[in-house]
Amino acid sequence: MQTQFRKLMLAAGIALALGTAGVAVAGDATVSQDVTDARQETQIWTTYALSPYLRAHDIKVSVHSGKATLHGKVDDEVNKDLAKQIALGVSGVTEVDNQLVVQPDYVPPSRPATERTFGEVVDDATITSAVKSKLLWSKQTGGLAIDVDTRSQRVTLKGTADSAEAKDLAGRLAMNTPDVLSVNNLLVVEAAHAGAAATAGTTVAAAEREVTDSWVTAKVKSTFAHSSNVNGSDIAVKTSKGIVTLSGKVSSGAERALAIELAQNVRGVTSVDASGLTN
Image (cartoon, rainbow, N blue to C red; front, side, top):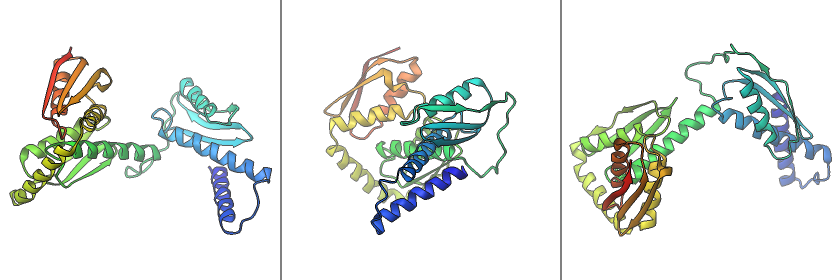
């Protein structure tokens, strides 16, 4: 990564020079190639870091004039080939010298429990975004001030809820999000917030009058996509005057019931017709 860092610093220096001194370096083939190499190295490394199959492995990447060289260890031939194919998929990379060593008993270097990899940080951020979106779209939680934090796929909810039902729903929406391992629901039910809750309810009601059928359809589909126990790709969603119609195939009665509940909970939905949703 030292080479990659050097090239990234070089690229940053070039950009600064172009912006401040107007130095004409576009014609310098060597500098241009270094910038391209650095960009390709970064793209390959980032893809490895995001891959659940490669992120834990010790893989080093260097690129020179379209040729990527891979060093390090992986635990099987499949992951070695995956690393090669990812590198070849980067624009401008035409050749891969795959020097990865397959070591079946390979164990990634240990790190402090509080330290997360780049891929894990992205995973946690994705979960947080999904949970926040579902809470925002919900009739019961959309007007609440809820803080969502995710670390190592474990979600913590903080803030206040106007009822035990709203608190429970927030926890279930979070737990039903893909890749969530656990939910620590620290929401506090406070009667003192009844007035604020009423105001929030009025705001939500007003917002529901403003939302369009297309908005409702999009949010129902997104809610399904962000839910681990509903296969949204198999469910068609249509909305007319707030009435959501679901059709398609589900794997079980439980999935059907959950799909109906999730759709009914989206702001702007007045009722759900699931007569076309079968299992």
